Length: 104
Image (tube, rainbow, N blue to C red; front, top):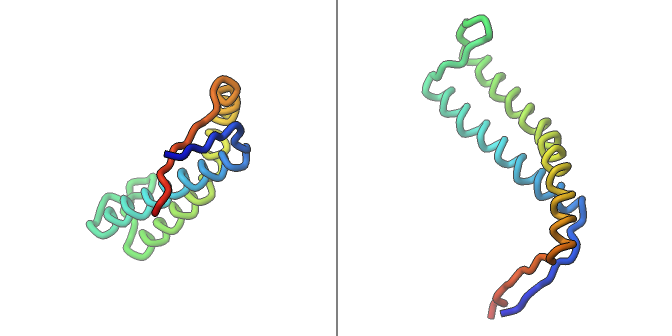
């Protein structure tokens, strides 16, 4: 088995991984859960308790999707501020080892 030893991960790589992971989760959540609620006539209401009509429910879905895309960098940045120093400390103690089997 071959092995790759990673002694240092760049901060940009960590942020990209977090952004892709969190962004895809937020988008998937929005599309799956809210679409199921829209198709089944789920309880989409305004803060006043009035039901959202058919056309405006798709507008609400688009708004939630846009908010998910716009807040993904924020949440990735917050997680990055926590994870980046921890990964740096971990790399000082023990380098990251990745084992892989080459394809034939």
